[in-house]
Length: 109
Image (cartoon, rainbow, N blue to C red):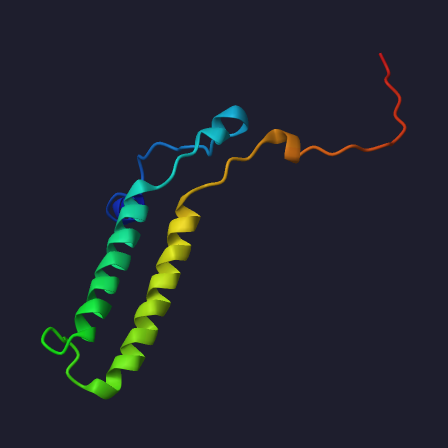
C-alpha cells in the first residue's frame, strides 16, 4: 500500500521488483503485522462482548440491540480468523506439482 501511495506522488523512478521464482519462492513468511492487527481486533471485540454482558460495564445501553451487536461482533471475529489463516502461507513442495505422464517421446541429438 505505501508503494501505491508513493506512485501517486512520484509516478516514475522506482525500482522494478520481480516476484521470486523457483527455490526463492519457498522462502515466504507469514505477514506478522496483519496477524497481530487481526488478533488484536479479535481480542478487542471479545473484550467488548464480555463488557456488554455485565449491566455495570455495558457499552450498548439498549438491551434489544445486544443480540444484533453480538451477532455482528462474532461474524467480524470469524472474518478476522480467516484473515489470520490467509496471512500464514502453506509450504509448497515441488513434488506435489509434478505428475507422472506416459507419453511416447523421441530425443534427437
